[in-house]
Picture 1 (tube, rainbow, N blue to C red):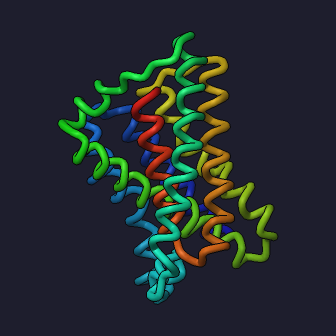
Picture 2 (cartoon, rainbow, N blue to C red):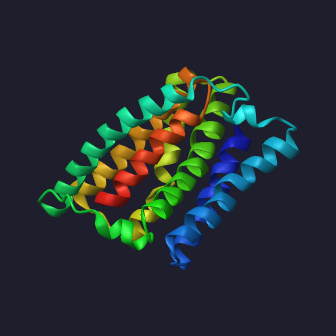
Length: 214
């Protein structure tokens, strides 16, 4: 349990420091820095320190039906899209159906999707693959492991509130509630599917919704 908390603390510290000191292109954050800070320590501990395989992080060598995972991911992604529209309404006082600037900043839809996919992979490896499954291994119930890991996952998103999103009031509550709900849902999806693929897909849709509408 102490190792789990230590890893999370190290990740949170370096991510918060990076967010507060550096303002770079989003693709640098998500394709380079975040994998280094979020995934690097986990791979070191899992592969080299403990001599375990990637399957302990949810990367099954025999994943279940990927088409089914994609289908469920799309359905849940649509629900997150509606949630994003409501968050947009609370922030701006009106519905916005023109999320073109977010795509333009990413230099097109392709890079936009790739960047958000990279984010989803890094955060799911840390949040569900490591935190959630390690809490389960340490004896917490599934429900409690989902709550604790989702709360720690939520805290990792606090630095972006200060440095980039600048949310206040209801929009901030909606955003943080959405982060927690995403984490909690993905914990159960990981347990159900025995694979981290579906949580990554759901996270991808959530990321794209936030990027487009917040």
